[in-house]
Amino acid sequence: MVIILIQSTIENLAAQTANIFLQNGYNHRSIREKEFALQKIVQLHHENGYDCYSPEIVSLFIRDAENRYQQKEIGKIRFMFLTKTAGYLTEYHEKGSITLYARRVPSALSPYYEDLLTGIKAYGEWNDKTKCSIRQVANPYFKWLLANGIGSFAQVDDSIIRKYLMDCSRRMTLNSIDTIKRSLKKLHLYLYEIGITGNSFVDTLSFVTPTEHKVKKPVPLDEIAAVLDVIDRSTAMGKRDYAMIMTAAVTGIRSVDIINLTFDAIDWINGEIRITQHKTGKTLALPLTTDVGEAIQDYILNGRPKSDLPFVFLRAKSPAVQLGRTLPYQTFNVYRKKLGLPKCIFHGLRRAVGTNMVISGVPVTTVSQVLGHSSIEPTKQYISLDSTHLKECALNLEGFMPEKGGGHL
Image (tube, rainbow, N blue to C red; front, top):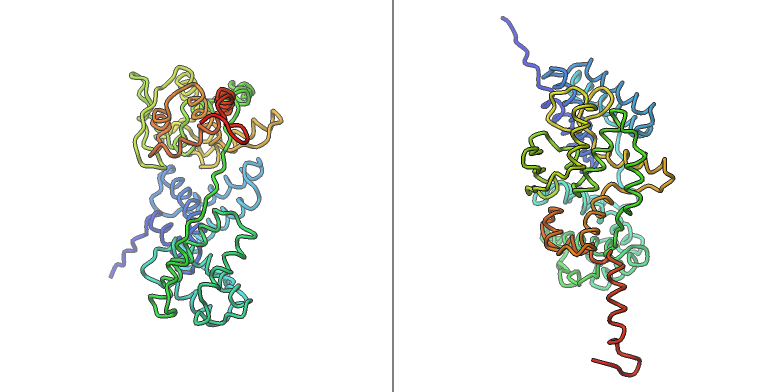
């Protein structure tokens, strides 16, 4: 008899490896980070013509991570994480299982509250992300109840819940309180439905929490100009970095859409960039301005590594793969550091586009369309950044402002 062994594809192997962590209670963020690293290994396999696991390709992935660490492109913790994730994939390929260290369970909780946490984890009506968020709120809540002599939910009433929220308010922002309130509302409704409590406390937890809206500043135009000017465009990496930053500074495209930008998204004949936005899933068409077009063209013709990948922007060093999600931010701040400027998020370039359009008198509805917002609400933040015009309005209205004790109506 001849036994034919069918080797699993690298995609299936990566998915099965990630599933091990899901089965062992790892949180959503941890699993997502591991899936991202595993997908990079899968991508590297395909680029080198492999559909199934190859130890040589995994070694290539680890060597690349080591080179990036030595070049200070990534930190030690990230390097160790990538190496360990590659090791998990290899271990699952060779053994069909992964040896995981025992994970620490929440401390200082009684068996009663531990059982409740376990029940949340097994609750079938919530997805994994919801379970994780509820457990993250429930754990400190249960600890607080124990510390205040509440051994079971039979002792919990409206005053206890309000007291806990008041205690949280002394050390948390309003936005955090709102998040905790919503999670506690789900938690207490769940406890009511499974018969732990006789009250869902829905009314107690239905109050309106005022939210805080921080005005996030854009990158000043002089700083954008200085960064573009300091880039060495005689090198392949410089051409890429210049094109990326120029694209963001002129069009306002998000960094995730820049790294996902493909050749077929650029309509050179009609002078347009057409993308499907990663964040909203909606299509967006923007004009391909001369400065952006020339920068991208220079990179494609004179700086881009030879590759069949559909993405415009690739890593400058071997292997020439798609850019990581944090690379635009890292690149932007490398040049800011050269200029002695503080770190700044890459999204600040997008805010600069929106703010400058509002200052120029472009209607908010038009700005919303250009930036690809799903509504005008996200665009309203740029109005508050137009400090010059706001000051002018205040001066113009000064004569009509009521004086103390009276004035014009």
